[in-house]
Picture 1 (cartoon, rainbow, N blue to C red):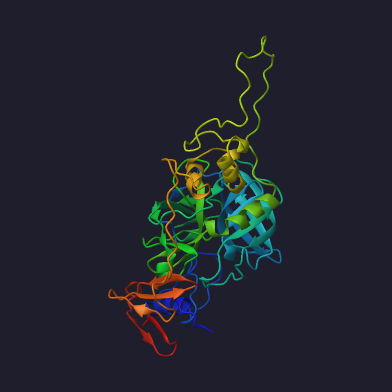
Picture 2: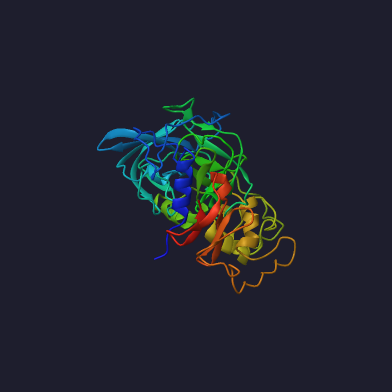
Length: 393
């Protein structure tokens, strides 16, 4: 069986540097650190954060075990009866008190689930998705609910963290939004299921949403997962998009816009224009605007089958980008050509790996070329005779 390279490098390198890949919550009693396992420190404030009064979707979560509140996290409404949070804010708990402070409503969780996360302890598992869902007993109604991006965002995209921690203390009923951070490829730190931010900030509280800037309805691309000495980990939600959508459906779905009130008096004369063709879209599929009807265009039908937001709430920039990613069409004309598949995706590099001239270690795994910048951990690339692999040493 092949040796597992990534956890050894990430955990040991960080331990050698005197820090750990840790989650900013849940807020629980802290245990002593060990060399082979990183721990979650007490929560820290979102640097430069301001109270998120314009985010009615933001929620604070108190988790229970056997009826007692034992921990706390943050999260976001994504439907009237559905809260998105971190997996380690769900696993191991049997009760959830939910408060949406800027919607003035509360509820309790009736069930909770993760995609594959199994631990609420201190370690960040690079092979599991730190994403959890809580289904509510009573609906929390707000004007619009954020959507979850079904596709990854380009590295370098700017986003906001939300969390309930300020000046090192977990607030009972407030949420704070931090300044924009740049989302980077978590694979560079050994966490391919996460985005990472190299800016030295604290993400606030576990489970808080990572949102693209803009007005409501906003777009969630990740949730706060873990924090190290000089970077943070943000669990990507696009990788578990189908799981999240299934839970939204299980919770009753997202309401559509209410129908307009009928006119008080019927028109005196029938309209001079013929009725609109149901097969004609109300605007170009490459332009943002009102939600489109799925039957107006085959591409619209494909997009709405995957991203119901586009036919229920609005045809936004995410919907126009899906013209290319889902339909294979280009809003500039002909669809972009697909590159021919490489005969050897790793160009001869094996799982044993090799050292690059710049000191990085690279290797081939599952037909994908992977690598770690050893210098980021104060280490260099070399051959490890114990594992038989090139590694950060």
